[in-house]
Image (cartoon, rainbow over all chains, first blue to last red; front, side):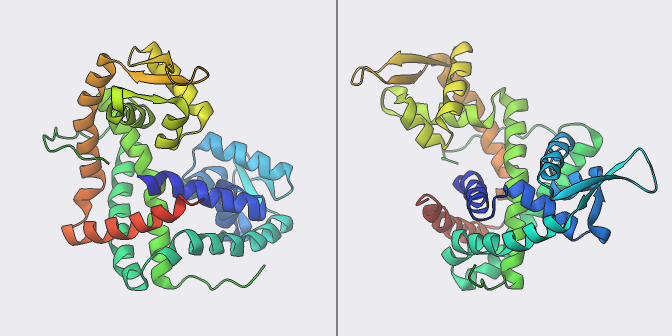
Length: 158
Length: 152
């Protein structure tokens, strides 16, 4: 659990200090940079970053205020807005990338045994897939998963 | 900016998997606790640290350190727990300036009720998806990483 809370906050701090972007802003720019035409519908952007629709909307407004993103009406559907990355946004991302990479190396990779990286990646990918399956199921059906079974066992600190 | 070596495919896989977990797992654990025991994950962590402290009490600053929450966040959280009679705030006997948060019997009962819910949630969301060798590997590797994170 220490990792789950501390790692994102350290990466966020590193990015903010080194490149003036939060981790959410960085992820948003990264997703746009990989999209055709450097643009995405707001709903697709929210899905790609895993952020809520309202959070994405505020984030894009903030990035727009800094000239890194523009909002354009979709050519296919005038009611739908799309976020498009500007050249300034692209330059910002290029600048932030090595900052983020250095942070990932320093905070995570460098503190692992090289031989454990492969097996660790496999184990965690399996967990991530299961988690995503559970979350998708819940989001799509709008219901909670069945109550977890009550476990009587020795006290452990988690 | 000095040149940084790009991630190898295995490193990249590890990174992406970890970020997916970091994004989803806290939300799932929080929602399981909320549904099953009526406490948020932050509530639970706060109650747990108090339950383990001598006299079941901690100075607000120590509680913030233990939970990893900001001082302002912990103040709001303790106020909320106090309004639910799970915690009381008392003046510190050793430090007149400091407030101490103390777990009430009701808070202790809440913690005891929430604990099996949380344990089942951690098992079904996380541990059940790995075999024992993988759990050992992940525990050893990630605790090393966590130790370095705390250096700041």
